[in-house]
Every structure is written in C-alpha cells, then in structure tokens.
Image (cartoon, rainbow, N blue to C red; front, side, top):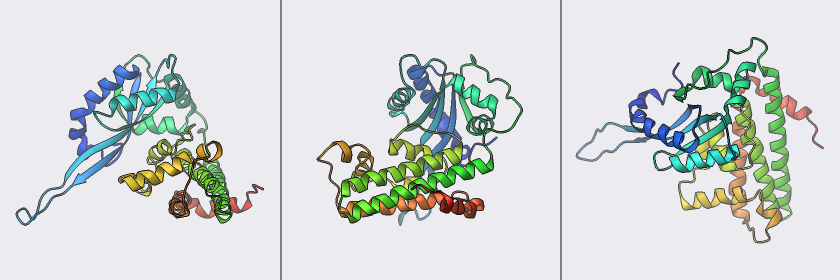
Length: 294
C-alpha cells in the first residue's frame, strides 16, 4: 500500500540515502524495526531569460520515523529519540518516535489505531527479523468515533480556556504569565491534534517536538511556526521557553507586540484543531459548550 503521495515519486531519491540512514540508526539504537511515517518534500524551480522553462527539482528534505527497540537499556525513550535524531542529522533531518517492541506489539494485538495504521500503511525500512508481529486479536477497536469526538471536544475546550486565561493576563499587563498560558493552549491543541489524528499520545511539553509530530495530521502546521528566519526562531523560542521560565526565572520578558503575534498563531492553531474533522464539527462544538471547566 502506498503510504503517501510524496514518497513514491521521490522514492529513488530517498533510497539513495535510505540505507545510510538505516545503518546510522542501527548503530545508534540497535532497533527491531524502522517504519517511515512521513516525509517533507522540497521543490526547486529556476527560470531565467536563457532558460524560460525548466523542470521542477524535488527532493525529500526530512522524514518522520517510528523506531521500535526491544531493550531500552539504561536510557529513557526520549533519550533514544534525541540520540537517533542527533546522529542522523548529518544525513537527513529526522523526527523519531521511539517505542518498545513489546508496547507496540501489545497495541497491535489490541487493535490500537496507531499501531494498526502503521502496520497497514507505513513503509517498513528495516526489520531485524527477531520480533515478528503477533496475530492481532479480533474484537472491538481500541477507540470509537464517539470517543474520538470526546477527545477532540475536551482538547478544544481546554485549549480555549488556556487561551482565555492568556488574554486575561495580557489585559492585566502580566505578559510573562500570559505567555505561559499561551504555551499551555498550544500544547493542548497540538497534543489533541496528534492523539485524535493518529491515536498516538506524546508525553512531552516540548512544543517543537509536538509540532513535528502533529504535522503528521495537518499540512498547515509547518507554515504556522516556520522558524526559517532569525525573527521566526526568536518568536517561537519565546513561546517554547514560556512553559518554565515565567514561573521560575525572573528575567523572562516578552513584549506585548510579540505576545499578540504569538496569540494570533495560537488562535490559528485552535482553528486548525476545530476544523480537523469537519463531519463532526457541530457535534464537537456542542460538546464544548456543554463542558464545564469552572
């Protein structure tokens, strides 16, 4: 099964570095399996008065991988993720999700939505052959459409409450705490996008990693916080740092101008979340109105 439309037209280009990338990850983590979950494609087209029509050059510029490890040894899974990404950076920018093989096999047997989608659709880049997947157990899927609606409604409601809290702090000129609440709104929105869109839950407060993971579910996210200029990097870092520093560091400062710029981005993020599943949008909105967080 084709995993996604960007992969196959650029497959020859990716295969040229695929084995080098896989070898790097094997050396870093000794994995059981490596699945390709997503890619970022960069296009380049050049024209001039001398070449008025030139073909578009395409290349895979980054990828998202699921790496299964049998024995995490003395490292936490997030440490394996950081190690894999750091070692692979010279070959290709990589975002990794690292799970134990046992946990993934448990999910697969139970009909977990994330595991099932991976097995059915993801490109298997590497298989050590030492851990064949068990036969899944017949039965009810791990989550129903109603449960997904509930997750979406709850996530929207929490994100909106944090956004309202940020506005209140901004009105009271407490910009640092407004930034903290804005971080919480963004974290809730990204986590909900990820969980409702893929079935995977990431236990992290790192917005940069959540943004990369959640990009599996929405093509609009990379353009929301592009980080392609010094100004964009500075702006995103203000939001990233707002989880810890406003509460524990007296020197965290953010201007009202920057706060308003970030608020606009987070409001758009919430709009993406709200419109992610249009067929159930009315149901979600009614659930949000019925939810009491006071």
